[in-house]
Length: 304
Image (tube, rainbow, N blue to C red; front, side, top):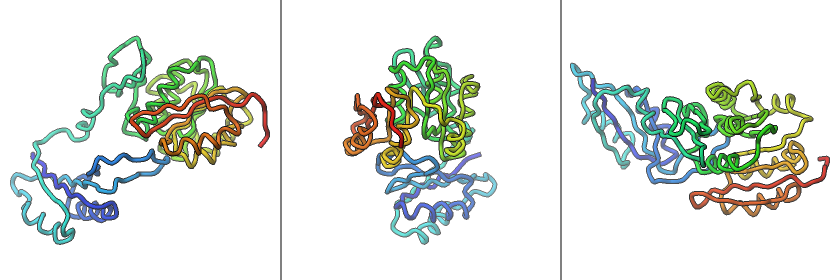
């Protein structure tokens, strides 16, 4: 069996219409890709960010006895979407539900510290290897902000400590902390899918018994009034600034923290907000714009 792919490049506001159009014409699948190599800000949990220019691809099943008339299909699409770039290609049959796996490889975070897709063998069997199912929620280690948090965890003493993973996504940071020796991780996210993904990835790595994960209101009921030794939060600058007083209550005196999802232009503003409660020890960047801010809770208690 062969497959037909139709690639259409459209502006962001045309994506939903193009998806619907392709599906209504019998596409078995529609995918979205970046048309201009545009970097995206780290999404809030539950959000699906889009590029300004998007390649929308419809995949059609070709019946050898009754093949699709490609010229007629493209003519109809062009009538609905005039003046947009469009091309097609035919593909030989393959196992589509497994093909995406070919794009993932182990990622080295530091010495003896790897992220390994669950279907691959670790490059170093005796290293700290995080097994991950990348398909469940945001956080595969590929994004610079996730990498920066993992790198920081690898250099931070988390052994026998209580760790919070705030905005946990796939749970990769909490799982990493547990594999690095944390006593317990409390994770939270506003997206129920992220809560599920975190549980599944914790189970995959054999650390589910030392992890709690829930939606924010569930997290509050479970965790408070305890305080953590370490907190990691990989979200966005706006929510991070709003959460500064909350994080100050969640972390012990002189407890350590790392924030990511911040671009270089936002570091000064975020650091200014956090300096009321925390000592900023280090700012580190990766891939030009993405930064991690880390430090310690002021050595005194405040009530907010």
